[in-house]
Amino acid sequence: MGNTLTIVAHIEAHPDNLDLVRNELLRLIAPTRAEEGCIQYDLHQDNENPCVFKFFELWESRDLWQTHMRSPHLDAYAKATEGAVKEFVLNEMSRIG
Image (cartoon, rainbow, N blue to C red; front, side, top):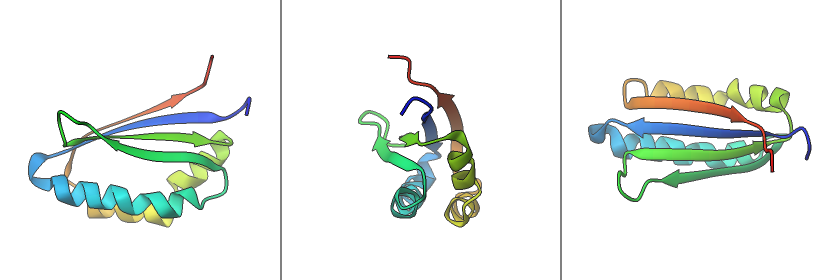
């Protein structure tokens, strides 16, 4: 797993769109976990601020993650949640220890 890619995605929904964003994020899990190269794809919701979500992802390679980023289910998520997400921050990371 030396060349794996870790992704931490931070998504914050607008409070009035919380249920929409949460449901659309949950829809991403099954098809993404079935993708080639997906080792881990876990969604978390903040205990203090339920509008904040984090995906912790592990991919076999950056190329396979890039394929995921162009997937039909990610495109459908983006269209369904347009204007409903307050903040989105994505970090590409490498494990160092």
